[in-house]
Length: 450
Ligand code: ASP
Image (cartoon, rainbow, N blue to C red; front, side, top):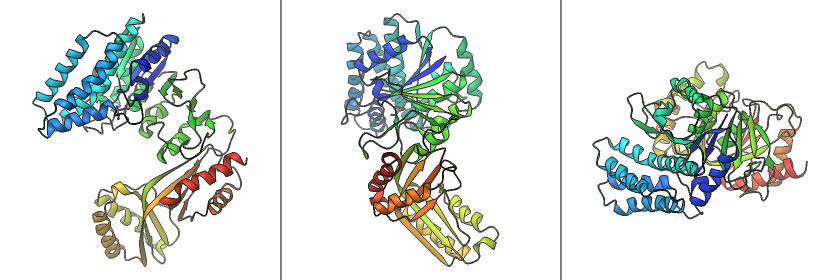
C-alpha cells in the first residue's frame, strides 16, 4: 500500500488535477491520497492558503472582506467548472466560509479553520474527480481518519495515539482522499500544522498505516545536489538517507518540509519524491540506510539569517557549569539555539536571526557579561551556513581540505567550522554575501572535478 501526497503545484488548476487523477488511476496501490491546497499556477500567482490567510485577517480586523472571499471562490470555481463538478460544491463552500466567519469562536480558531479550507476543498474536489474517472473514492476528514493533534494553532503537533487510529484505515477498500495541513484536538478543535504542513500529514498517515512507500509528488524531477538557481543543471540525487535529507533541508533545501520526515523516519517508511508533470521519471528515494555510498558528498546547501554569540574565557574547560549557564540565559529569553561549536576556552552559540532580536541581544550580552565574566564576548550578525552533506563523509580522507580549498579559491573567509557532532555533514559559517560563490565553488570541487 502506498500513501501518495500531492503538493500545491500539483493541484493548482484543473489541468494539474487531471494529471493527479491519472497518476492515482495508474497504480492500484495508491490507496490513500493526501492533498495540499491549490498552490501557485505561475511564479507571480498567490497560493490559496495565502488568500485564505488574507481573508481571515480582514475578518479579524473587522474590515470589508468581500474581495478576499471572492478571490478564494474564483480560484475554486475555475477548477470545478473545468472539471465539470456540480455547482452545488461552490455554494456549499461559500456557505461554509460564511459560517466560519460569523461563528462565535476565538480569533485563533477562526484563522486556523479558514486556513484549512484550501486543503479541505482540494480533497473534496479530487475525490469527486476520481469518482468521475470510475474509481471508488471517498473524501476523508482528518477527524475521521484519526489525526489527533496538540492544541497549538498554526503549530500543531501530532499526538501518538493517532497512529493506532490511522492503522485502521488499512481495512477500507476505497481510495481515500485526505486533506493535508490540519488535524483535530481531543476536544474536537481544528488546528493547522506549520506552513507547508501537508507534507507532515502525508508522512503521519504513511507511518500510521505502515505504508510500503510514501510518495510525495511535487513539481521537480528529483532532489538536486544543490539549489538549481545557484548552480545550473546540478546532478540529481537518486537515493539519500533520512539523515542526509534532514541536514540538507535544514540548510535551505526546500523540497521537503524538514519536520515532515520525522514520522516516516521513526516508522522506517521509505519516501519517494516524484514529479506530477513527469511521473515516470525515477525521482529520489529517501531511505533509512544506503547499501553503498556511490558518492561521498551527495549535496551542498546553504542558508542565511544566522548569528553567532562567541564567548571566551581562560580555563573555561575547568569551570563546571559554564556551558549550562550560558545556555540557561538563552533559555530564559526563549531563544532556541541551532548548534554550539566549542573549543577548550571558547564557545560559540549559533542562533537564527528571527529568534534573536536586537533587544534580546542586549539583554543576553549584559547577562553573559555579569554572570559568566568572560574575557571576551563577540556577536557576529549576517552569517550564512553552508553545509556539505553525505553519509560517506566521515570515512573519506581529505574532505575538509577539499572544502577549505574550494572556499579559499572563491576568496571566502571561513568564520567557523563545525564538524564532528554530525557524522553526515560538515558546516562552515561564512559572511552572507559570500554564500552563492561558496556554494558554486564547493559544487565545482565535489561534483565537477570528481
Ligand atoms: N497549504 C499549506 C501551505 O501553503 C500547506 C501545504 O501546502 O503543505 O502552507
